[in-house]
Image 1 (cartoon, rainbow, N blue to C red):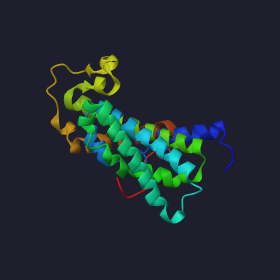
Image 2: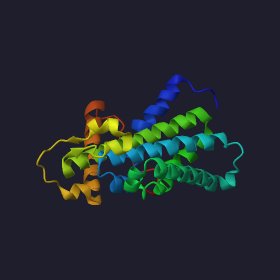
Image 3: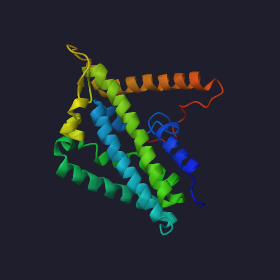
Length: 232
């Protein structure tokens, strides 16, 4: 493949974060989206972990692309992803134990996220190391954006707070992010349950589609497209 130009690298970043966003365009990764995004902090934490695994797995898959037999490429990709997630899980348990207790169940489930295997198969296996790692990072950041934004809306509507427990994820210096936006608010339990995740997701998808139509015109490509795969 020819050397990647800055415009091409910028296109990879924009595609992963926005135009081909895992959450809002491909509609993948819905299981952690509905289960873990009860707060913006949880969404941010799981999103950043997924971004790290995506970037590293794309890097390794690209580095091994010329020596990986085509017949067993999928098991090889899954083994790479599972190994990285295991390392991440052990590191979280050792150094961020309080946060690990909150989302520990969902860290191993990163392996089952279709976005990781999809990017390894569709991009990393056919491109050089740097563009592959960049694609993994941008896709992970796009997923982080989706998780954090849905988590923020659910947290505000569900409990009236924003970035609750941020100091557990980012350290005590980020305690200022923990906001109590609605003093005296008694909460809306539905928003903190999985059905609330579907409600918020539906509202956000509708809002994004409306914004795209208003800003891009009637002939613009719709942001929401059919999912590229059958798993979530």
